[in-house]
Image (tube, rainbow, N blue to C red; front, side):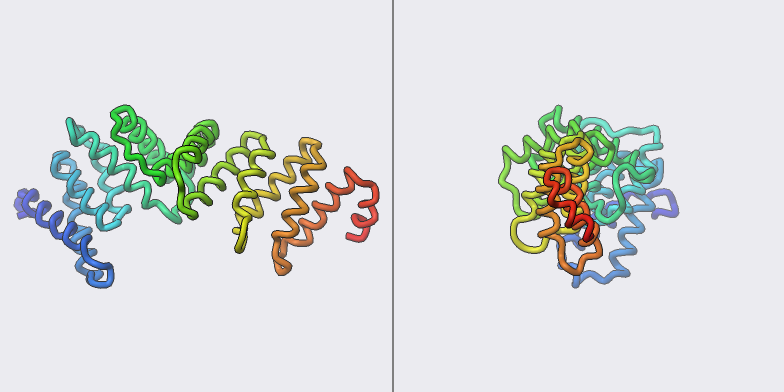
Length: 276
């Protein structure tokens, strides 16, 4: 059918098969079957002659399978096509862009050349959905929006979204950590080390502290030094030394940073500095 140019029935069958597979536990899905269905959907839905009411449901089925790569390939081809979605399909496409972006893990940052175009399209989709009161009230979508703005250097937007999110929602621990880390980075980018310190120290209570949090606190201390706020710098570096594992290759350098900050506020620390 597809070879004769009558691809729509094939596309519909593949879409239904993908949706059925998406309901099964991963261990029950034969990899070759999943790949065959996903590849068929991607190829047919990417054809420029496909109408939006054909390729959008196909992309939604691929998203249900978690195949972000295939969804991006369809968007790449269809964004170049002359026929654009209309009516209710517009909102479905916007939400599809957002949901596909949520699957982007371990692919680098949004300011990478390979992702900048998608980042702008996702932000536009979020803004349009918001105008229609159709953006889901999902904390993970807010965090995705913050991540994109942050990676693109738009830190005012990050802080506005983060403060609203922190005030409005009770976040599970993993999302709370993601929020505070993103806020800490944006406060640093804005030259506000005290606020960055407060956000990052919220990630040091109990358990092992993530290396990126320790790196952030080191940047906070360095910024305090650069602003000649040596008392604050010494306090941050003292906390950083306590949090750094004895086995860490960074411990010696952090001890030195602490001693140097301490020497700026207490001449007695000079002797310690000379020992280091």
